[in-house]
Length: 358
Ligand code: SF4
Ligand code: SF4
Image (tube, rainbow, N blue to C red; front, side, top):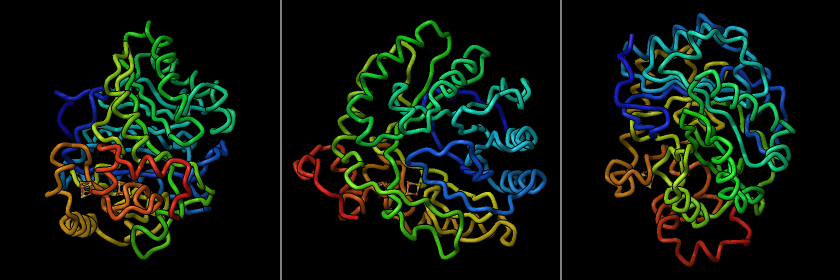
């Protein structure tokens, strides 16, 4: 059993010190979102007993900071309560990443109100924008967030930014902040850019796993400079109830902090959650060997000596792609990318409206 969560709040920013297990429980989902990167391949999903064994084995070897239960839509798994309970017994924090369109009632109160559990709901903008991007799901997603807050469940949300919502995003947050003003609980949020499937290409390893679904991103990704500008504006804004949960202008998985192992529903893992290729299968490789592979890959990256890492402007990236932004913008490497967000230099300003490299 892990220790309590003293000194950390899910609204106070994620300070990753231990391992993160990122578990896609299923590729099933009732929605068809416009830029969802999850390929819907029929897979033999690991069952409840197998996932319990996986999370407890890793926890015996190393402190697990966070278990992220994802999909597809994780609430589509009828055995989610048992997997969530096992996660809470193995990790410091457990979150469920959800679209918010399936009912909460399948999960019991003692799990939902657990002090080390939180939901992360996807919200991409005001109703008309969210509905355009996420298959008409605004009403249910917003209702899910409100219902969770009203029940005292720890809730936060994540927005995926593209040309469709970038210009209205900050203004929408101000409106949302007013709407949430009466809530007792602070609501954390984070921002990501949409994934360009071509840019992530064959990242990960040599094994085929749940691939990235293809969609065109031509002209859709915000530039690094625009993300830097938005990040600084959000960080400087005094919200009443909203709290920006990241120190990075371009959020990643924090790969170089404690390491991330990302599993697909069939148990194939990689060390990058956006990689369409896998390193091995947890059905055949022991957790000890998996951790050895992870440590070797982390050591081979330059992050620990990087100035952006020591100042938490970047928490590392195992592919060096920062979720595809490096290749998409035709930049030399991740440090050039980070420099572009921070200096907001002319190169990035020129890139506005210009076709990306992929
Ligand atoms: S900029 Fe690159 S080298 Fe530096 S911390 Fe980020 S991913 Fe690592
Ligand atoms: S591309 Fe890098 S930052 Fe993004 S999920 Fe993969 S390892 Fe993490």
